[in-house]
Image (spheres, rainbow, N blue to C red):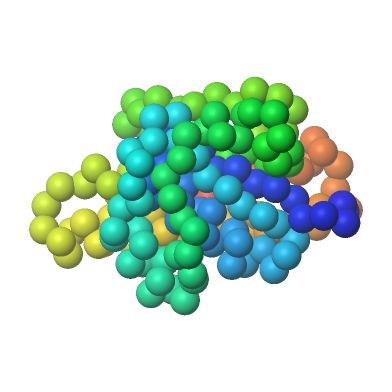
Length: 165
């Protein structure tokens, strides 16, 4: 275990909902063991208000959350990333950004609640579904015995968590 927290980056296309929620959840559950960030390959520039509402309803601070371009984390001087997760939904043919370098990576596809159309209640249910799925996966992730398993076993666990719904 490093003395510094593990840096975790969540990537999606717009960085307005899923990756923002994941960043918030890791920072809340990580208890100093993890520091999470999020970014998008084509950021919208705004955080979806329904994502912010749901994060706050779960007792997590939204202070400092913003939609940002993934290049912010690829430039010189950016924090080193130990883990990079894509949360785009390949089943919906949504493009996923690719992260260069050597961090441990996994794909945790989650349907984008920001594109759901319909009533406010229907949209809120889509956000809750995405949040719940992310929360389950992140709870498993932050509780893995990082100091006791090999990199290969860890990679297998991350992929397994990505299939967990």
